[in-house]
Length: 270
Ligand code: SAM
Image 1 (cartoon, rainbow, N blue to C red):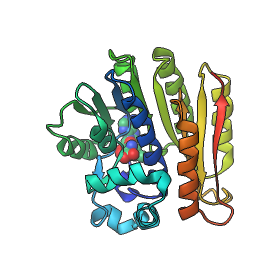
Image 2 (cartoon, rainbow, N blue to C red):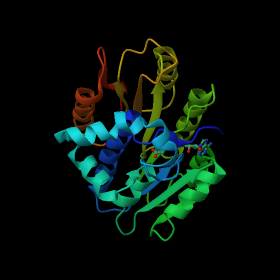
Image 3 (cartoon, helix red, strand yellow):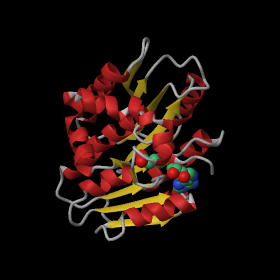
């Protein structure tokens, strides 16, 4: 396991993922009934961008820093949470910040050092449980949740060439166990072919009600670069598509390069 999220925290892909995630968390809050957030690949939770690995790469300077400076209206809620939390919040920090009494967060991280930091960062937080554990295995262990309401974030590092296939298999199995759950799945766009194949396989699977929110910073012609990213959402809550599209447009306006684009596309009907 070579991937350490601290090197990439706050970059454009994090902004896309976290802004959309916050909208999904807000949707969970719209009903009074308690919910579970299951974050299968959690990282360490919060990141000091001015020190250590994040400082070394400086990817955040071309991501969250520019977005904070521009303050687009569509991202006002996300940016207010980022500013309130201080250190740059990763996915478990955003989820933990939005839990109400009775809601729960389970977050898993497999890298032993990062799992220890994750546990340390959230020690004593009510409703929060951090595990050093394989996130895919956690899908089998924790779904369906007793609450019957849940948001599942699957955000793997894509270090392995078979990650799309692993993801597809585990996502479909998790959906079959928890058909009413909201699943958000992050994926990189280096070039189009692997994403196209992933979508084709999903379309012939048992998944229903799926949209893809994508941000392409630039046309994906150089496969050595992270040219864009997407968030696949299964069972998107009412209002996610227009709100998410407005967020992607705002990110495009600030971070997009010539030829960049975004889309909110329905992949599979209900
Ligand atoms: N979700 C985090 C966020 O948005 O702040 C970032 C997660 S990062 C992209 C992926 C993380 O997954 C890394 O910290 C990596 O160590 C961890 N990881 C890799 N394989 C894993 C597995 N099988 N189960 C759980 N965590 C894993």
